[in-house]
Image: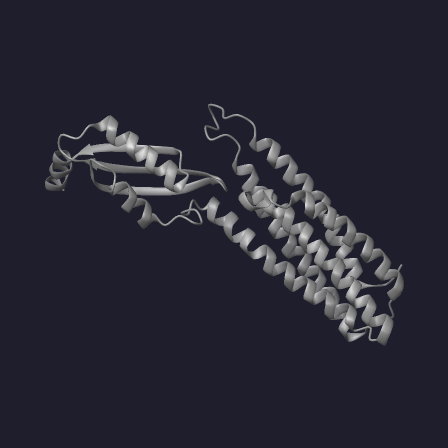
Length: 261
């Protein structure tokens, strides 16, 4: 009705958010299902897959916006600026309410962060559409419509990059963000009775569930139960790692394995 690309981009983005938010809700509920004999970690990864999908959807939308903006630069059409501003203002109001609902919980969960980023980028799109409408209303410079659309697209790309990067990091079982493997090893080797730690691996099942496996060499005469309790307490208190697989070895065994090698 208004012939505005900025408004159309914002509308298409909001339409995709219906699917994105529904997917996030579905993944959140699936992740709450208990573990089974075939899925021993449960279904937590559903949240990561939803977050990755939401991020890629944002990139697809940006591609469509850029393609349409290019055509508008070549032949900018007239736009009903006042009507565009009214619709964009209503869209902004909806996104502010949605953002307020999601704010806070998005910081510790990639799936909710994906949903929150969709809402934030929607709000930015509405602000951009209002700005473009105001410029065109006052100056009649209709190129402002594709210019604002491109700026909106760049903001969406910037906001979604970390979401995609962190989602891929979890799926590739990289060391979780905020944890340094060197710090973990140093902390474990500082536990009383531990002389050395090797074959250390840390990864994330989902954005807030971390897992660790390691071999710990216990000093000769050390109490295995005491050492194991010390390792588990250290990992939980310092790194929030509760799912662990620790293989304890004696110094004499390690020496025998080294000589055999």
